[in-house]
Structures are given as structure tokens and as C-alpha cells.
Amino acid sequence: MSKSLRIFTSRDSRSGRRTSSVLISTLGSAAVLALTTVSVAGFTGVPVALANPAPLGTVIFEDDFEGPAGSPIDESKWIYDPGFGENNELQQYTDGTDNISLDGDGHLQITAKMNEGTDLSDPQVGDFTSGRINTSESFNPTYGHFEARIKLPIGQGIWPAFWMLGSDFTEVGWPQSGEIDAMEYKGSEPGTVHGTIHGPGYEGDEGPTTSFTLPDGQKLSDDFHTYAVDWSPNLITWTLDGKQYASRTPLDIGMGNQWVFDHPFFMILNVAVGGNFSGNPDPTTSFPQTMLVDYVRVTSNTPAWTGSLTPQAK
Image 1 (tube, one colour):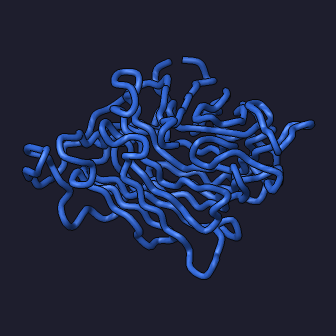
Image 2: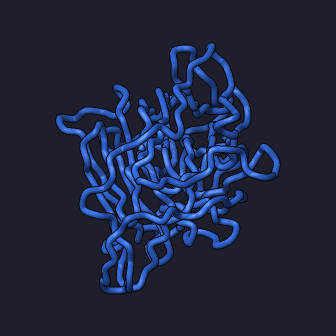
């Protein structure tokens, strides 16, 4: 598979939630873990995470984005993911340092830019450029604590995200592959973060989602905040700055639906412009808009973590 691996994502037109079409490789299998087995409505013999999950372990992935200003991403960890976005988005993702680079102060910067001549009262597909990167060729873990410290952009139609997609998409498709949105955000609602899972029977607007809004009118665009997902067998929790605001188990996805979060996933960082979730930019939106990422770190959270730390076969 070429270095310009494409991930095309689209959102259900009824709901504004993401659907996906991905070309990736699959590696590894879920670890055999110490679990409790229970039976619930719609499930038989489902292993459920123990009440006291294993403590956080060793760092299994880390990027602190150190390097001279204008430097490209570390391609031993990330790949550029160029192309036009789906989901009724308007940007074209590029594969160089015009939209994604290091800022020289220890941050990754993903910048959405408006092309010359764009009419914000009637924006069109291709009027903007932006960036999207992923770890599909280098890091596909099963379970872990996934954390990123990010300063978000702001403005109507700006849609940044830190999320994960199942690495078995080419075999099973979406939503069977599963999706975990660690951080999703509308630039028009600068104080609110969203966390969601998607799978078969609970994709799109049916995906269990929780939002958290900062108190006292604070904005996530004013400073760096730490967004994290702790993913263990049949338990996923979301935290903002170390405070848990959501959790999901098989009991949350509806009777008869399959919990598909038991196999390798990879990470994605992107900034979309427009789309069903955020709506389009308008004359109030200023450009460029930049998402700054201080670090991305993953630590093991199970006694038998499995995953891929090496490039996969092309």
C-alpha cells in the first residue's frame, strides 16, 4: 500500500455522524485477559472489564513533536492522509507542510486555510485546505490509554477531531470496524467537547455520545486541554483534563448489537472545514485556523497488551 494511504470518511446524511471507507492493513488479535463473563440482554457470555481495571502501564506510543519550525511529521509514526473529505466537508487534505508541520515550540500544527477568492457566504468544496494524519502503518493497538494535549481552533464550520478507527475495515467495513471519537468539537461551540462510539446498529446519530461543557463560559480554544480515552475490554471512558465525563459498556449500545471494540485500532488527527456535524463556515469565520497538539501518548492499561508497533506490510 502506498505511503499516501487514503481514509475517506463520510457522515450519515440524516444525522451528521461519521461513516468511513478506509484502505488499511490488519494486524494482531485481542489479548486473552482476566475477565468476568456475564449475560445481559442481547449478549451471551460477554466478557466485561473487571471493576478494578489494571493500572496504567508503560508508554507504548509517544510523540512530543519536538523539532525545528516547519519540519514535517515523523513518518515512522504518522502518515499524511491527503484527499477530499466526505461528510459534506469542504476542505482538501494535503500531504505536506503547508497544512501540517511542527511549530518549533514542541507542537504539531494542523492548519485549515481558505483559498484566495473564496466567498464565505457561499463556500464550496475545494475552497479550503487542511491536514489529516494517522498511525495506520505504524501503530495499531488493542486497548490502552490514549491521550493528547490539544489547543483547539474556533469558528463556525471548524471541525477538529482526535479519534480512532478499527484496523479491520477492509475485511468488515464500517461501522462493523468500530470507531472511537476521543475528542470531537464544533468551532461554533467553543466550550464543548463530544465523545462517541460507533458500531453496527449504533452508528451515525445512534452512536452513544456524551458532551461536556466547560463552566463559566470558558473556551477550549483559549488554552491547551488534555483529552483522553481509556479503552479496555468492554469498557471505554472519556476524560477531559483528568476528569471523567463519560463511560460506555455493551449495556449502552442496545439489545442485540455487537460490541466491536476488541481488536486493533489506529489513531487519527484532523481538522475538517464544513460538514454535516459542524455546518459550513460563514462570514463570521476567520482563517487560518490551527489545532495545536502538544503531545500524543498511549500507555498500556491491561496486563497483556497487544498491538502493532512496527510498519505493516504494504
